[in-house]
Every structure is written in C-alpha cells, then in structure tokens.
Image (cartoon, rainbow, N blue to C red; front, side, top):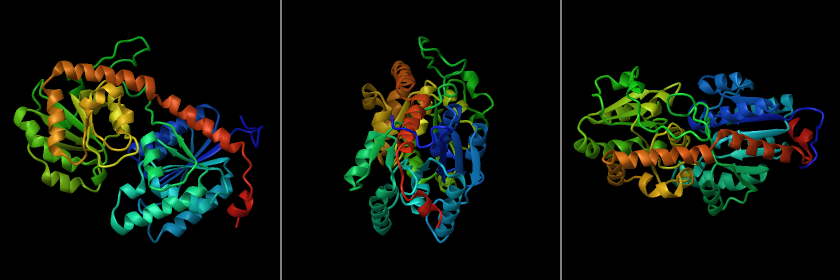
Length: 402
C-alpha cells in the first residue's frame, strides 16, 4: 500500500452528492456510516432538505449545506465556487462526487487539484437525447481527465462508459445494501440460517395504501422515484393484463417525483400511489413481488434491497441489472425495457407459480447476502481512498486557493 501523505492523522474524505433521496442518497449514507466507523473523517456536501443530510449526520459525518439543482443551469458557477471554497476550508485527502451534477461541479471546482473519484450512478448521456445527449457525452469524455478514478457501480456501467469513448482510469465496486436493515421480518438471519421468503400477512398492517386489500390478494410493489428513468408508466401499461388474471391484485408505487400527477391520472384500477417512504423495508416485506421497470440505471439499489428482504424481483435488462442477479435467475427476473407485454408475462409467471416464486426469493436472498453486503462495498471503496491519498498531488494548493 502506498505511504500515506499524512500518516499521523486520519484520512479525511469529502462526499459530494446532489440527490438527497433515493438510491444515490442511500449509497452515500451507507458509505459515510461505514467509513466513520473505520475512523475516517467524513464530510458531506449536499443540498439541504431530504433524508440524506440527517442520515449522514447520524452516521457520524459532518454535513455542509451545498445548495445545488438537479440539472445544470445559470446557478452552476455559484455552485462550483461554493464547492471550491468548501474544499479549500476542509483540505480533504479525497473528494468523492456522486451522480452527474456533483460530478460536474466537483470536477470543475477541483480540475485534478485533489484526488477525486467520480461515481456516475447511471450515465448522464443516457438520461437525455439529441443535442443535450451530445453535450453530456462531450463533457464526460473531457472531464474524465479530472478524475483519478471513475468508480462504477457495475462492470456494465464501466463498459457503457468505455464504449461511449470515455477514456478513464476505471474502478468497479458493485452496490451493496445494509444487511442488518434489509432482511425479512424477525432478527437478521445468521450465515447458516435458512432464508425466510413468504410475505407475512401481518406485515401489511399499518400501510394505508393497502386498506381494503383482501387477505391473500397478490401485492406488487415498485419502490422508486416517480420519474421517466424508473419506467412506472410502462408498468401501468402492463398492469391491466396482470389484473385480468388476478382481479384482486394490487400494485403500489412507493415514492415521489416529477411524474406523480401524470402517473396518478394514468393509474388503472388496482393501482395506488403511496408517496415517499422514509423506510421502504415494510413495503418490501409486505410484497409478493417487487418490480422495477427502469429505462436506464448504473446498478439499481431497490432490487438488491428487496432481495435482501427475501422478495423475488422483476426488473428490466438495463445497465447493472444482470450483475445484480444470480445467473440462474436472469431468465425469470429480467425483461426488455419499454416492453409492457414482456413485463406482464414475467409478473404473471411468478404470481401463477408460488413454488417458483419461493425458489426465486430464496436464491435471490442468498445471492445478495453473499455478493452485495454494504460492508464489502465500503471496504473496497476505502481501499481506493487510501491508494489515492498516498499519491502525491502537485498543484493542490495553487488550484484550490485561487
């Protein structure tokens, strides 16, 4: 391991994140908790509001308000300047930027002056089309030189970037979940304990969106931000076929976002919008199936969380999806994106075959516990920090202090 530049003091890391809820926020909060527990001095710059700041502070991170919009705009120069000033004040050993907006602002602020990691959490150019896509792709190609590592959450995400012409110093650490938090009802299972997979009817009590749901009726849950990326509109188009075969089935969309009004207007019979949930675990435990019909991802966190809770999942075959599943479940759990008929077929296959559903749940839970433990993720990321902090970084003071 390279010699640390400051061997007498703990490593200081600054995380920068624009999303304050959803999967990115969960990843950042889990990293902050694990790193603070390792003795790292953890700082977080993020917009005020939302659960991320509170979760990170509770985990031991020092939180610094960084007002920043989701998309680039007229406020970008001020956002970059505020971030540069914060870096100058904190003098971190490593800066870790999460998602497109933070990656944009941090790399503009630092320009290689401090060891920098950038995690896309899904590529920005996949979220747009036309001239906006060309501009986003041009930026990612140019800005790669200002990241000591582009840290992808799946090998598929790395391949996607490389095939788009991004010449980066790559690293891949798959997403993980907190297995002490995400598990079936009861205490977390030990290494030798059999997985618990059937939905517990008692777990549905206290969830208002389930009022009037008959005992034993199938429950499908989608936990995600309500936006085009997550594909809830495709799921609503698939739902009538599911409902025709199971007239008492219910679908609950858990989350909030810009598409809420449109999805509410389009929701067919049997669909409820439950709003954002501070804790998605009760929804996973109540569900017979968890579904995520995304249009693009890096490696979605919700399916990993659901599988850790002992639930089978159906998800679209986008970036990172195959790597989040054991190979023997891909035929059952993966469908093409933007295909309501294929999505309905996969959902019905699992709903109509309880034995298959139970086997799928057991296999999924085993897989996540073995391959997607957040502690393993945090350890691998921290190793990258130590590697980069041990490297000299000339021009640090000159670039940050102007």
